[in-house]
Structure formats: structure tokens, C-alpha cells
Image (cartoon, rainbow, N blue to C red; front, top):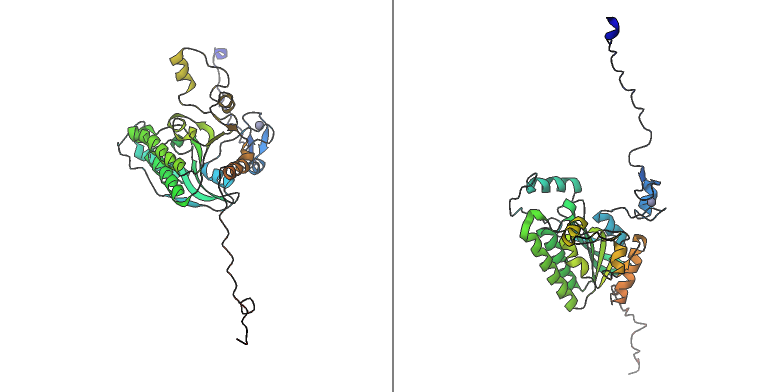
Length: 305
Ligand SMILES: [Zn+2]
């Protein structure tokens, strides 16, 4: 019965893929308009799609490069969380911290630095989403608070670029206390009449929205950024209603009066500088030129007297 038997041919090995001559990461596909973009073009355009103005996420360092004129001074760079609760979820918090520090090169989810924005000295805190979702733990709270206190001492305006999933649950109630601590520092900044601008980027949620992200003298958001407290699913289940379209996006929040301005990233720096000037920030006074004292310019002396 030879025709019932199937003679199995060995499966042909897949033809070896030709090595691509295009290096990895040279082209990027825009998730919004599906255009293929040259990576370098995207970078020179501040990571905004040149075709449809989709704002790609950028990291904390790139934010500082965007805002500051040149070099900046970073503060409290080596502050690290001590894992006070000895917390374990899918893996121990300590191991998660070590892996994230290794991957991002940062010690926690914020960089606090001072430098000049269009000639105006300012203090900027920039949050890093890649570090455990930009979550606010004890270190983030402490670094931002120290930054604000430094700004009060040096009479500097403060800009905080928010990008966070909220409080860091691995630090429990201690992370929630950071909300009050930062708000307290901001109140002191307000009392000495120094401006504070909050920049809300995609995403700004949870405890960050519920505290310092909404306290700016000016709250600026990037287009289509997700900004909210709880996620839409939780809200829908609680209020038992379907949410309107565009809910928790910048444009919707602007319409409802939650934020002051929706601003393209490419205009961010000049607008912030203008706003700071309007609120009284001044460029550092140039050092007075040393007065030259020369014999010729000196008081005339009557040789006869
Ligand atoms: Zn696009």
C-alpha cells in the first residue's frame, strides 16, 4: 500500500536572510501618519514628526538639551533609593532599581539642573519615563524639593518637565508624602514671588498630576499628551458612563480649563523664556567693567597749587 504512505521530505531550511545594508535605527515609522522618517531629520526636528507633528517621547537629558542654551549644572546626582519597605512584586525592588540604573545610566527618575534658558538663569527638573515609568519615589521628591529650595536661595525661576505614571508603589506611603513635600516647597517659592512653570508631557498621571504638575503659574502641555489622575477604565467603571472622545488629552483639558496652553515642542523654549521674562525673570547682570584709573582720567591737579 505504497500510496497510503507518505514519504516525508525533510523540510527545507529557510533561505538565509540577506544581511540588510540599512543600519538598525536609521529609519523610524511615525505611529500617527505611518510616514517613514529619517532618524536624523527627526532628531533635528526635536523628535516631532515633520509631516504630522506627532510628538515622540524624549528622555530627560534631551529635554534639558532642548531647554538650556548650553551646559548645565546637575544637583544631587547620586541620590539613590534605599528600598525602605524591602518590597517585592514580580521581582525585588532592589533588583529592579539596579537593572534600571544600569539601563538608563540615571540613579532615579529625575534630573535636576540649573542653567540658562535664552539667557535667563533657571532651575529645571526633568523627569525620565524610562526609569520605572517616571514614578515619583522618595528620591524624586527629595531632588525636586532640594532643587526648589536651591532656586529660592539663588532667586531662580523653576521649570518642571513632568513625565510620570504617578507615585512609586514600591515605596508605599513614603512616595505619597512626596506630593505634600514638593507642594510645600512650591508654596515657599510662591511666597518669595518666584515663577514656576509646569510642562506636562505624555504621560502625566497619578500623584504627579495630583500635585506639582497642576500648580504652575503657567501649566503648559504638549499636543495630545495623556494627562489625568486615574486611568479611563477605572473612571468608566466608577461613574458608569462612557467617556467622551479625546478624554484626558491636552486639547480636551485646555477646552475644560485645566491647563493654560497646548504648545508644540518646537516653540517650547522661546515661549517659556518669554513667559519667564513676563513674570520678572532677568538675565544675570553682566559684571560691571572695572573702572580704569589712569593718570590722564584722574582728577586734574593744579601743578601750581
Ligand atoms: Zn507623522
